[in-house]
View (cartoon, rainbow, N blue to C red):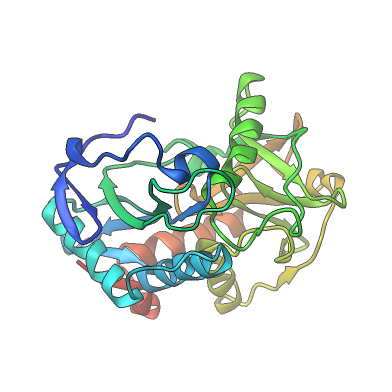
Length: 306
């Protein structure tokens, strides 16, 4: 999905033209992947106003990523929140995607960065449904990848680290080359972990089940879905499960900033449930979209008005 250019990018406290937002070839993060990012969405509400979904939670996660990676974040959470809003306003973007990026600049090379400056950039652009508008109802075809989700002691799985996503790219390429929409990765124990860029939920006997926070990212949409489910009286179980338990699920869906709430209709050529969006998935998905578009006051605390 090609990125549609907007006018300005926020870099180190300044708004500059999109085409002038450049970095030197010897930028450390470009070579070694030590950096962190966030994916955030801005939605247009039914009343015409724009909101950012869970802005504080996303920026705080970026700050946690910086701490985990031993990168000193040069801005406060409050300053970065304002920078996101300023960037959206400067680009007159009513709805779209927001990408804050924390990276190390040029200076020391090799695996021990010492004097490299820390940079922060924020880009915004229009971006539709990540896995396809039609798949919000029909659901995607997924396949278990031969690539494994890294063990939490081989990489820091609670940080959205730039370099960690090589694992996801390889898995995504592998399964899409075979005709599937999305990859599912197992963890080091052989249990279901997450998709290439999304958390995973299955429905069994009326309850939601999702992998615990061992090797999976602490997704913000994941947390929102768990909150919505519990508010509706649906049991939520954080528990490891195997691929064959996935096969016999009544429903399954993916959650993430890009994917939002997208059903899974098939895994490894086995139909999941009825092979389309199930009733619990539909209920959660509908409530989620009502929340992000400002249609319900119950979740208004998740929204920051632009």
